Length: 130
Image (cartoon, one colour):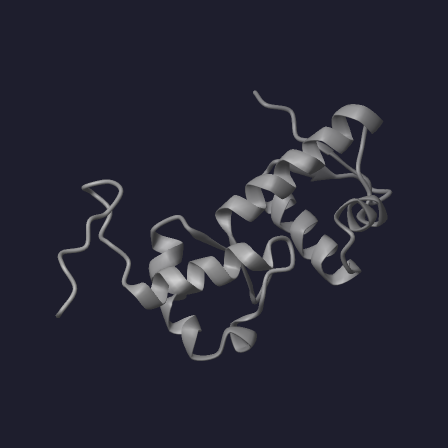
């Protein structure tokens, strides 16, 4: 094409084409309110590449977040648990200023990632690192 050779940040990672980079930027802008596949429209075709590159993460059944946004949420959840002993869905929802839908999806993701552990009363604590 007319553009020069694309250089990847690391030699092992294939360079993402502009459309994939644009999708990554959309996901980053969405932050802790990750869009669904249908909300992304035709851009969703680039999700597999972003997931493979470690840039995007699937949250719950059908939400897609930027891995940097998930890292921020993970840090905030960790801070709440460190300060308060546990985190609840309502607490995270208020902390992020978001809806229950997103707070719940994010907490379930952290449970699945074995970062947090859900207690019978629905509070979450950090899973003990062995």
